[in-house]
Length: 355
Image (cartoon, rainbow, N blue to C red; front, top):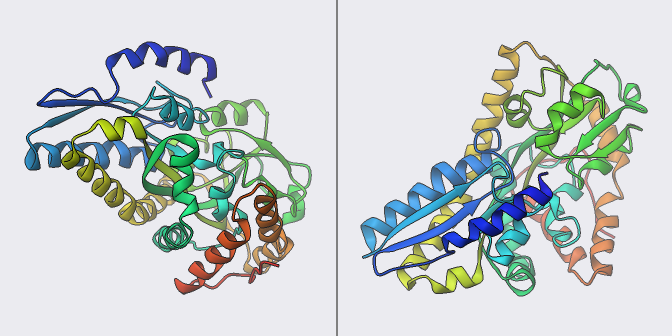
């Protein structure tokens, strides 16, 4: 994270005029704490959402639209983007919900049922079904944070990279492993030491021994070159996670002409609809790339994987009750999610139930 620097600089950046529109030209600021390239959801923001909105506005309206883009923490860090959109520093932001464990606690629900869909397309369909079934998830962005949810995105299937090789789950006892936060409880069964971190900090932290492993999907493990300090990559299949959001400041949205608003809504949904296939392709590229650079790739035996899943049997219920206690529909969301995953045809290594 680039906490003080990014937000301080962003205040000056805001002078460019959020959502300012003339009769012909509209300028919007868009950004993310993660960089374009290693983070697929940011790449799709920059390479799909932005050009598609520009194209459609030019072709279908009397306006043109320009984006001032700031990725990789240039405007707001990974844990600052929700607030930057809320405050109008960004008109549109894409971010991982995982870095908002308090404000968006329940939106992290896929993390609370690990070993779910390995296929990102299945995952995104299940997550969308939950948002449709429980409108509170969408409404909270507007009611509490002054934002319009334009679309969802995610991470491809999570595995585990480590500095040193290991053969059994017991070998992970006491090993320090980094993660985003909501996924760190996955490590309890292995007896590993969880360390909350962010992707931009990962390489140096692995290199210097701040931790000796990362819960990470192959697209980013390759893109951030974590294989250099940490060359051992074990395929565990904790699951793909639909936990990224593309949101727009409500005031900026309301200032737009109606036809431009409609295009942004439609392209935001298209951004979400293509996310699963985009993430699946990134997973395949990431695994192929890791092989090409000489990473040591192996697969955790299915018996050990099932045992790991069983060890987390209570986790979904614990998180559901925690959300309930915060005044959120935790039990409703977790039950809806498990049902939505079942509807995709995915077979869990262990069938979670919500008490």
